[in-house]
Length: 255
Image (cartoon, rainbow, N blue to C red; front, side, top):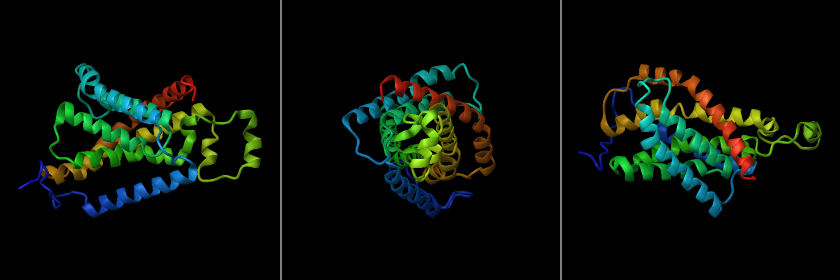
């Protein structure tokens, strides 16, 4: 017996214990909001922010189900590169760079999942997929925003000639010494960081908990580890490119 396609299976062989999942996400949310307040990344959303988020999430859906789906026909199925992942990551990196506030990742992934259900999937299995998208891809992006604060992707990095003086006059709080890197380096670094974080959700959280919780089955930990390792090189490249693209776009719109 199931509810809305949720079997609620907690004892599939190899399944991650639900207590660990709840503890991880709870601790992640708490840390993200506390640290975001410390670095200045926790702020109210404006109407413009919400417009950016809505457009970015909608474009990610269009890419995933139309543009990416078409291009994917010309790329053999493989564990090393995903065309859908590429477009979604770059689109939401740009949104994060334009807004630079904690919560943008989770809100964007909520809208992404809502539109995905309306267009393709239906609402079977909800609210598990909302929680999965928001508390993995979304939360991991918000974690990087919390660490970087308003200087996400080096948007407000100081000029090199003033860096030494600023280091003498400003106390280092949190990870400010990282955010003082030149903008291009910081944009690439944070893009890579988010890209690497995004390697984790589908193999680990979906394959290790969400899928067996919904549908049952044996969890293949060998496949989970292989898929994460295999995807790292493309995640690094895509994340770096996405971070640099984001920096150029944010500067072009005058932020």
